[in-house]
Amino acid sequence: MLVSEPNKEGRQASIRSGKCIPEQRWAEYVCVHSSGICPPDAITFDYVQQRTDAPFEAVHADAGASYVEEYRFDVSKIEPLVAAPHSPDNRKKAAECSNVNIDRVYIG
Image 1 (cartoon, rainbow, N blue to C red):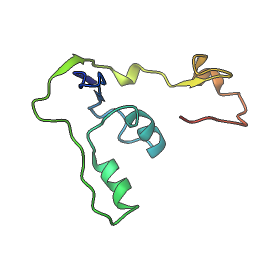
Image 2: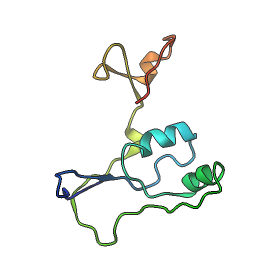
Image 3: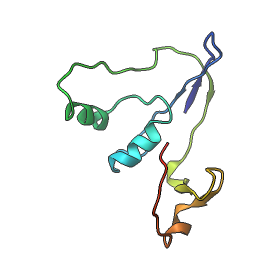
């Protein structure tokens, strides 16, 4: 993950790259990729092209952009987490919640 220099409003962008989940389902893919800017790949193009004939333009980071930080993660060592009631800060490993019945969810 790369973190950009702040813009004039003080905002920064995080840019994800690498192939961590291309074989997984679209929901997992979107969950990871929606949390920052990710270079579009075949999965993204296929998804868009199946839903519209309208022209679109992919967005990429500027060539030669400078970044404040660079982080590398071994995603094979990251365990899925879920938020338990009643706060997103109440995190549990997804494996610990396999026997929990779900009757309501919040996504966002």
